[in-house]
Length: 316
Image (cartoon, rainbow, N blue to C red; front, side, top):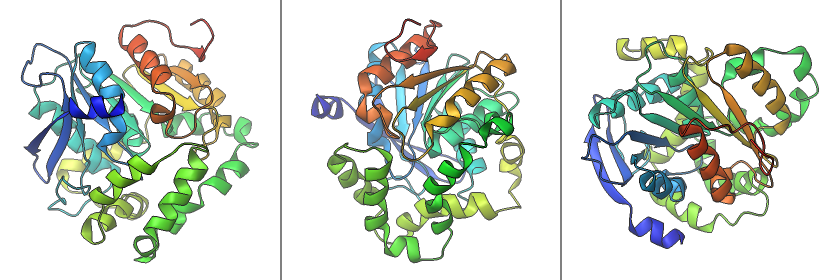
């Protein structure tokens, strides 16, 4: 079934102001009467992560674009050298324009793609009508109830050590294969990542492309000055969402602790922007690969404005 989905994926490349982005596409992308869906992958992963959701959205009437984000081959390296989340947000907005999206467009992101999508959801005048984020919630929802989070913080700290490791110069690149295999095992226990890792090594071969993947962490932690084109995104990326947002989390996520989920749900409900949360049982960090049927169903329900609250398996 996975091979069939891959065979039906086309490829398309567009030149954005600072980078050329190549994408896997499903559905007739030139039929602009269809709504647009842009799917953003995370680390350590590629656009092939969407091999289950892409065909499902195309079958539901969307034209689907899943880019290899800046720095991940076959996409290019950014001319301005910026890898901050603000630049990723700008790319998502430019993709919306390049593919003729309208207010029906949906942005779906996992991991770094989720961080990007959460930022776009918070941006005043966001061109996307809805956002779906997987495995990383809007940062603003985590700071909304710090007292209640005291029990989660120590567990999260023990899982987030790699964010500090990735700040080191050259070392993460040197030990990338060992690091990445370890993270996949810890983040999604029991999942066979062989196919995904084959895609990954082709996308971040040793050299500038591999460094770009780690520069996401370095740039977002360290950069304080931004080109004018990214400034609005840099100001908004930590804010609460202003468009309807669905957040999905796996019960066995070894990267982002599931203990955050009740706090995220409470915070999204308080925002009054149509935010929803759903938990996917028996899934880790790469929940869309481990439980594609459940994840696809939740997303399609959300896009159809049907209820998606609660734990997978319960009535909405």
